[in-house]
Length: 301
Image 1 (cartoon, one colour):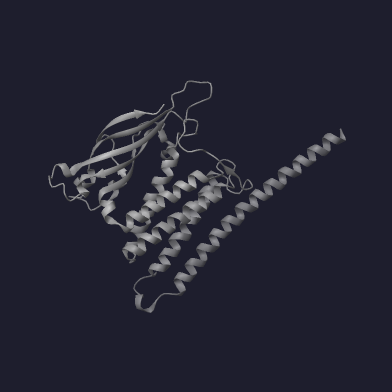
Image 2 (cartoon, helix red, strand yellow):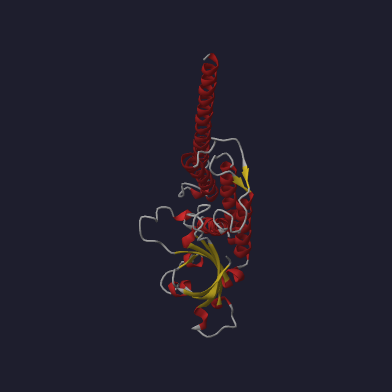
């Protein structure tokens, strides 16, 4: 009886220590984010340049706040969604694109595309703040890598996520391609990296980011980027090479196996070239509109 009581007390004390550590970790991270944000605002408001009195913040101060704010958002979301700080740091090996991986590698292409697209989004924001194209391109990539690396390291302290080196490798690859494409506009004219999403249009569409069976990641080679193609109609054509993995999320060992990895090869229509006639945007260099291409599917399973 005494032994059981002692064991019960030890378990209770252990749980209390865990709860206290968990709470203190959250309080520390939240306080750190608040401190960094407050410090950034203080510096921004106290160091206004005389020659730019009409602007509340300089471009450097805007960048500082943008980065600090972004990290605070990542930390806050991770604390709420993934219990950052609940575990000691752990690694995990998720594999690459094999059939026995959790998502058939679609999540890895998701890391590549998001790192690529966010790098260019950051660069666009920095150009609006007065940075040169080369400065914006470099800082955009570095900002993205800061966010992605912080998230991956924080994932290492999450019981449900953990640090995955394959994810980090694809983040780095996406950022590297973004940097090269940003420095060489002739490449960006010719080749895009896009995501296509075909929604369910029902209650199952509650979280876009993990609906990998509805996502296709593709590379589009645009005829419009090659000067030797003079025909105005041919300039709307694109060559597509894509990847899709479906049936992985609902798969249960021993149950029906509908997992399928698919390569797609085909021709598409350059939506962005048409949209540019009425709207100055590059968003469709990163997003593929569904049903605007004809593809041959090559099933790998």
